[in-house]
Length: 118
Image 1 (cartoon, one colour):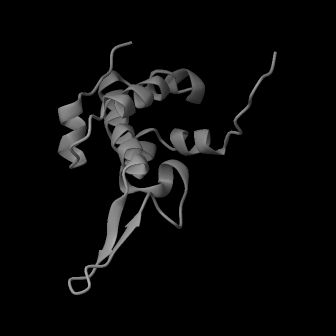
Image 2 (cartoon, one colour):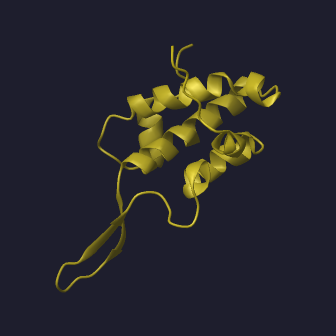
């Protein structure tokens, strides 16, 4: 399925200069299966919004942001995500995507990953 959102749309939320297409692609894979995996029937407009904010969340998780600055001595403190919450709940974009998915994305975070060996 084609992505529901575009690079400029994600950049309107997340002010970055990097290409956000890989994050949109990842969000699209998750959102494309959300109705069947969560036993929901979200319409395309809601799926688009979930994909938009989940894409912005993935950009946030990848790109370090300044959490504090000092003018004299030029000290910066960088952080990725949040120290108090994890997964989709670690930033405001993920929290919004989760809210739009009625909590489904946070449930994905609780699911253990499995690896099958042949």
